[in-house]
Image (cartoon, rainbow, N blue to C red):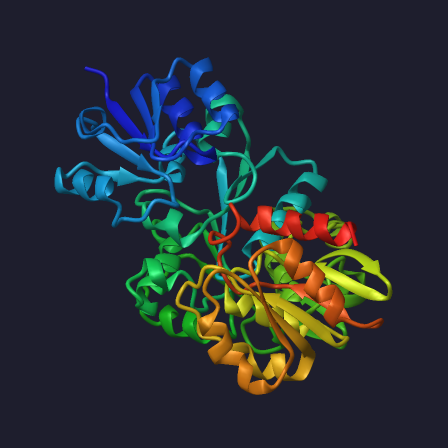
Amino acid sequence: MKKRIAILGAGESGTGAAVLAKMKGMETFVSDMSAIKPQYKDLLNKYDIPWEEGKHTEEQILNADEVVKSPGIPDEAPMVKKIKERGIPVISEIELAGRYTDAKMICITGSNGKTTTTSLIYHIFRQAGLNVGLAGNIGRSLALQVALEKHDYYIIELSSFQLDNMYNFRAHIAVLMNITPDHLDRYGGEMQNYVDAKFRILQNQTEEDAFVFWNDDPIIRRELERYGITAHLCPFAEAKEQGLVAYTEEDKVCFTHPISFNMEQEELALTGVHNLYNSMAAGISAGIAGIRKEDIRRALGTFQGVEHRLEKVCRVKGVEYINDSKATNVNSCWYALQSMKMPTVLILGGKDKGNDYNEIKELVRQKCKALIYMGLHNEKLHQAFDDMGLPVCDVQSMADAVEAAYRMSSPGDTVLLSPCCASFDLFTSYEDRGRQFKECVRKL
């Protein structure tokens, strides 16, 4: 009898999982409470995979042997609760894909920096001529690539939501950039639940594998003592100390393991302390994979950066506009503000995820000349920042935000979109938010 698999969510990960399941001989059904995008309908139809949109038909889902849940669907969703009550296993697309490939998996997670680090590692591998795929939160569905292609390596950005439903998947190289409060609304307001989700990236690692991590993160340091980690530890930090495999010294980045070489910081394509960590993690990962130091050095110097992450848009009447829409938590905004050199008009706000804005208050005081609150519910922003005495403005569209920033800035200033929040109150995604910002700026 054929195994039956039901898939909740028909986005990039869900449709990819459906194609893989169908190609592996499973009876497959896809269900999405929202409308399915045309390109995903076309893909499902191409492989004769039945689907529904705008509803969940219980009879078609609760008879499954296993359910693949898209990461954006919370465990509290009524259908997910019913699935669990029936005792049907719920897995992620990444977990499913991992069963059908023997490729080496380089997996990256963290509250901030994971997209840039993932993209940078992928760039190094490609520049070195390796057969590599990019997947997870960026790139195409891992399951779809496993179904239709064959790569020797996959570079995978993993969110905590994806890690929640991974059980037997093994990361040959696991990279953990940092852990700061994020998505606490999905974790019962409990920081430890979120931390535990991030550390799932280490499950199933063996002594043949590697764990690359930022040594100065207090949460990571604390959790290391709780875990019996068998993988080879590869810590990095800014200041040199015993046991680090990457650090800085006299304006150089120094790598000690597994390949020893130095590189001038000014040769790195990415600037800023946070990007220094991203470059270290990427260089270490590439070295572990056996890439030559000449290739690593060249690729670290030629990387172009990531859209929506401290992306310079243009200069208008002497004012620099920067798109950091990917800053969906407070710590990410902290890194952005830290890198600002000129008086800054900060655009922030959106769907709050249990944010604590105290982390950026001092930087806002030092760097910002005005604040623009963009969202349907800005009460928490007013409570956090209004007592600083800065000019503030409430807006409910990107056009109004950019128009206000234009009014409140002067030649020599920077306008920074770094929202601290999710985008879902006014926009469909952080990408939509960032692209609207760029379009509005270019119309000035």
